[in-house]
Image (cartoon, rainbow, N blue to C red):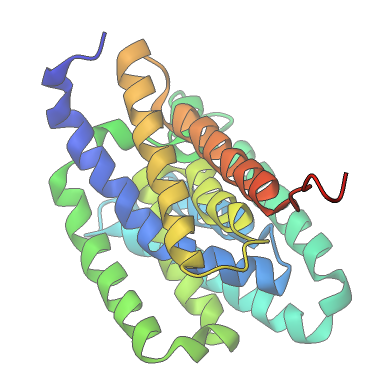
Length: 261
C-alpha cells in the first residue's frame, strides 16, 4: 500500500528525475543520430571514476565542491578524447568507446578494492540514490540545465559540432551525482529509442512523456514495494519505451478493409 507520508521523499526525487530528463531526452536524440550509443555509459563511468579519485585523495576531498568539479574534469577530459577520436577513427569509434567504458569501470573497481566502503560507494555511483536527493542538491543542476536548454533553444545547431561533447560531459557529470550511471544511460537512450521511428508531430514531446511515465511508475513501485529506486525506474523506463514502440507499431499497420478481403 502506498504511504502518502513518503511524498516528502518522492517529490525531490521526482524533480531530480525531471531535471535529468529535461536535457537527456534532447541529447539522447543526438546520441542515436551520431551512432555513439555507448558514449553516455563511457562518460558517466569516467565521471564516476573522477568521483572515486577525489574520494581516495583526502586533500582533494577536503576542497570545496570537489564532488562536482573532480568528476567534471574527468568527464570533460574523456569527452575531449572521444571528440578527438571521432575525427580520426570514426569507423571504430563505437568499439573504442565501449573499451573506454570497460577500462574506466575496471579502474574504479581496482581503486576501491581495498576501501572498506568501496562496494557501497560503487553501488551508489552505479545505481544512484535518487530517493535520498535533497532540495539543495537540485539547485546547481537546475541552473545549469536551464542555461544549457536556453542555449540549445537559441542555437540548436551547436549539437552538431564538437561543442556537443563539452555539453554532454557537463550534463552527465551532474546527472551521475543525482541518479547514478544506470539511470543516466536509461534516461538518454530509452526515450530516444521509443520515438526513433516516430515520424509524426511532437516527437520530442512523446519522448518526454515516455520518460515521465517511466520515472513516476518507478518511484511509485519503489516506494510501495520497497524496491531499489534506480533499478525500479530503469525497468519502468524500459516498459514505457517498449509500450510506446508497440503502440506505434500496431497503430501504423495498414487496416484491411472488407473490399480487400
